[in-house]
Length: 414
Image (cartoon, rainbow, N blue to C red; front, side, top):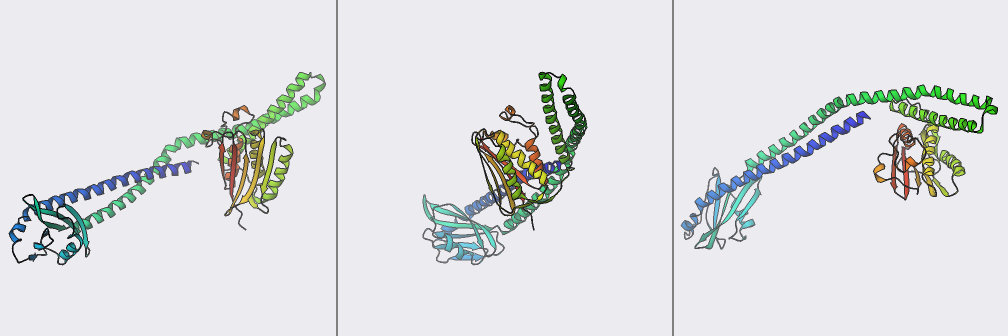
């Protein structure tokens, strides 16, 4: 139990850290990208202001000059509003044709920022209008290569992902260690409590047996000297002694289960036959107001302890009877994808939703359950038996509509 809790806490802390750190990394990454882009746009704006006058210098010139320099940091292309090329400086041959194909027909009066990828190169492009006397007379493409920045951010993103994974693993290991340290006193206290329950249950069985035997002797030898009240008291004491012995046996079973010392005699159980026999027994003691029906598949087997499986069925059926004054109780057995399913359903008083997660806790009893006899250990024992057989037990319920207890066992492999 503590090992599972320790792992759950470690996974919880690691997952929380991973999500929080990932969110931080994502925000940081895109903030840096946006900051870099804004800085580059400002640089292009400044370059645009320097080159804007070239339009008026070359617009009337019949020579359309396009100079080329591969070492130039910035490139630009100037056009009239009719998309006629005027002048430009380029750093990458062929890029002008690409830009004309993609963006030449855009509205010349708009300011537009484009990200362009071409021949494994990345470019940031700024398209701005050129005005004269408040009239748009042309436009200019200003751009620069951002390939090195793209490669840099790709490597940074890979590094950040790697750091996130490594740090998450380290956090998980640290969380696992710290959770283990924190649980040492809790586990020590819990083990001490389990030992006390086990020892007390074991030691109390003997005086209870002596007490019950003494009552038998008293009832047998002094029956003629006892009044009717005395005889009634002896019967009541024997009933209480029986209940206490049953409680001690249940506590001892749970204590042994906690310490993984509960003995089991595993054999191949003809589960279909066992459920049919059990249902026949309960049919005889079922109140006439309750309709009992079964749906049991044939030839289903289970590897387990027959006595404990029978006790499990008794607990669930007895529980269903206790909380159903009338109505219907059903017992079903089926197989589904290598899973053996047993379900006990009733349409009794139901279980409050807040109590569903607690019904298998020891001594836990809801307000409705407190009005009935019982120790609050039955469902805890049922869960322990299911766990001993590597199974799972679930409950679903609605107030006033009844409850369904479902058990899943791994099917026996032949």
